[in-house]
Amino acid sequence: MPEGDETPHPYFPRSLSLLGYKPNRVPLTELLGLFFGLVALALIGTWILAGRYKKGGADRVIICWFVACGFIHCVLEGYFAVNHKTLVGGGSYLAEMWKEYAHGDSRYLTSDSFVVCMETITALVDGPLSFAAAIAHLTGSRHRYPLQLIVSLCQLYGDTLYMCIEAKDGFIHGEFGHPLHFWFYFVFLNLFWIFVPLILIVQAYIALTVGTSRESTRGKKQK
Amino acid sequence: MPEGDETPHPYFPRSLSLLGYKPNRVPLTELLGLFFGLVALALIGTWILAGRYKKGGADRVIICWFVACGFIHCVLEGYFAVNHKTLVGGGSYLAEMWKEYAHGDSRYLTSDSFVVCMETITALVDGPLSFAAAIAHLTGSRHRYPLQLIVSLCQLYGDTLYMCIEAKDGFIHGEFGHPLHFWFYFVFLNLFWIFVPLILIVQAYIALTVGTSRESTRGKKQK
Image (cartoon, rainbow over all chains, first blue to last red; front, side, top):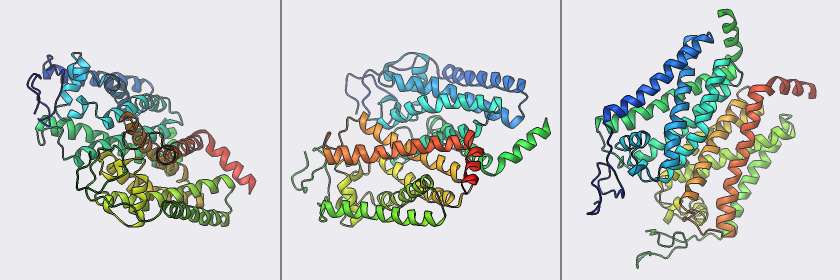
């Protein structure tokens, strides 16, 4: 159990000791609104930009996806990679976002070695490469599918490990079955980075093996 | 420290409790000889086979690499993925190989969650795909570079995480600086799966973007 002079915390396992913990001051709706609002802004801006490059619907969705990934990997996960040691007592918007997410996975507040290393790789590698993939799709560069394959495989590998390790540990770092903390934060948000990369890996693989010539012919016909 | 009625063990950290531990009976030279002998046999067999397909030197090396990876991932790492819980008391050749390697990293004897999940992915995904990449290179299939990129990226990601997590933990799971256990098992053998995949990722990336047409033209001229 947490020691007597510690601030009580809401995280799991309940016996977890979190020295220096400070509760969030920003309300939940404001935090979630800010996060999803900023993601939506990035998506809308990218959607409009991609339209100016005369990109079709599927291409625009892919470009938007990679821009959103780039922002989340570089800003949110980059912040975690740099500040994970002081996060538990942090009061910035980004620190409070992580303290909110940590209801679903307290490893983010204990500098868990796997989580820190995986998030650092995500911020340093997946983040910049996501932007590169977005630009490559925007300009129709021949780097687009190799980059899509690399970014999506890194995301799929990291996220699969992330979810499998927590499953092997018996989902002890969050309240199992909680609708918001377990199902939405831990399961839904993370499954997103399993299924979308899977689809993009298959698409890139097909384009790099059988589909490239046919696709480019179709592209020219559309123009 | 280990409890009184446990068999004393040679692993790190020295306080590690390993219930059911049985010391290896097969001598070190026999274990290493068997492992490197089998790898050498696979390499020689593949080298000869690749020669019959009239493959050049560089292609033969790549095919040999993927066959060796396939065997190591499927057999050695597959054995670990299935038997990690009973490894500490195991007496088979494969169990004793792991108990020998564990001198450099005791996480292999404690069913460490990250190591078990990473090794399971390696055995189930990297292993079969390594054989597929070898066959694709042998037959000159257009799947060869996409497969090479996928396998090498999985190996690079898994191994980078593996080494970084142990570094972040302060190399506590082996005797830091030990010439055989630390430098050869942990550093040298694992750096192999960092640098070779890195080179193969760069080669595959170039082939998939700028190099493909030039390479195939060169290949035809050589024939």
